[in-house]
Length: 100
Image 1 (cartoon, one colour):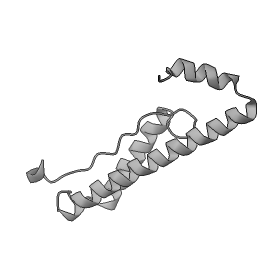
Image 2 (cartoon, rainbow, N blue to C red; image 1 turned 45 degrees about the horizontal axis):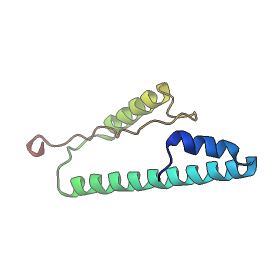
Image 3 (cartoon, rainbow, N blue to C red; image 1 turned 180 degrees about the vertical axis):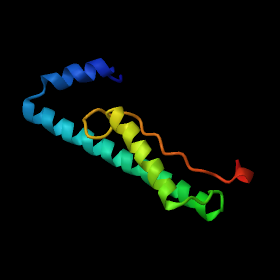
């Protein structure tokens, strides 16, 4: 029978400090790896869209402005520079009108 989240938390609280730290390290590693897979998948999708001509050309200053705005939003929400976690949303990719 599967344990509930609350049961897992209560069980983890009973672990010795060293095992709690090991569990924290394992969970961080799992999350890091999952995030890397998500980024790789997003990159593959973006490259495929680029190679198929679905993306609208953008100037470097426009892209930099968009990235700065995204970073500012993430910082404001506490997603960068803190320990708070949140779901990731990719910056908008401008697609050519005829492919929408």
